[in-house]
Length: 315
Ligand code: NAD
Image (cartoon, rainbow, N blue to C red; front, top):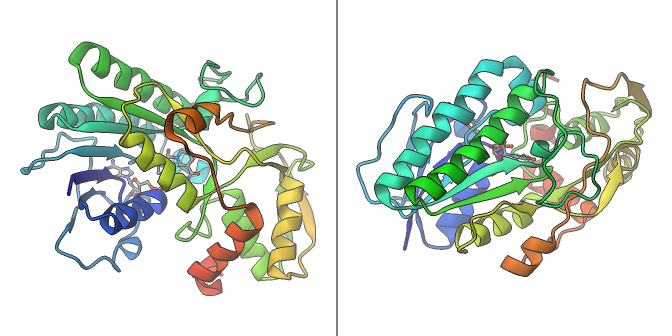
């Protein structure tokens, strides 16, 4: 049994990670100040192997027991959150990552940084390989998130090279599943909420921009495989099946049996035109690939969440 520290453990991905680590017999310390996460995501976990500490990681923090793995997920992640919290997002990526790497160093723990496909910005290379350096607008509104993650990657490599910390970096592509917040602005929860309510589905621009959607169970399996490997360089984890936003909207309408129509809204600033992971490294290094196709994942998300949760309280 290993002891795993999960920052951001009360968030969407973090809570699924806590569940899976516990299921595999590990002890889990979840560090989360509930800035964008919720106790509702972890209240079902009632075992002595789990502890939650309400801590803001932009301040130095300590854990007074041995830690074997540090999964660093804490960060605002949806555009609605990081546009509302621009300075906090930069602070979590910088101070928060410093403190968490320092903690991993102290405990001689294996460290995993949850990075993002957004480090590639609006990519000029397609699909995106880990070797691609990206095309990011540092001063646009999304820059606070993209550059915080790019800084966090640089910091992680510096702790590895200079301080000998055993680090890894996962570049997560769009992931979906239960516990996404219905009003967090991301495409799948928004489309599901609108479809289940038979309201118009709002597609940004003409909907020809593409995304690749990974079901949460696949993502968590890849994340743990990377943490438990000896790899230090970034690894893309995501589903390479690519859909236009229009195709996604039609699929959601179909899966939910909705009567919603599709309407178009203005494109947000610096919205990437294409997003698709090249997962050759994950396949080769980890023997990992996604298993859940979009339609199945959407059905599982609806089943696990229940329509009420997907519709949200602010109906
Ligand atoms: P989320 O908002 O649901 O979870 C983030 C968690 O971090 C929340 O529980 C929040 O309360 C916590 N947090 C934020 N600031 C904190 C602070 N200062 N101290 C302590 N806790 C803090 O987001 P998510 O979708 O679960 O994303 C988790 C991680 O994965 C993020 O780092 C995100 O950048 C990365 N990621 C997610 C996706 C995706 O599709 N969901 C894609 C790429 C990368």
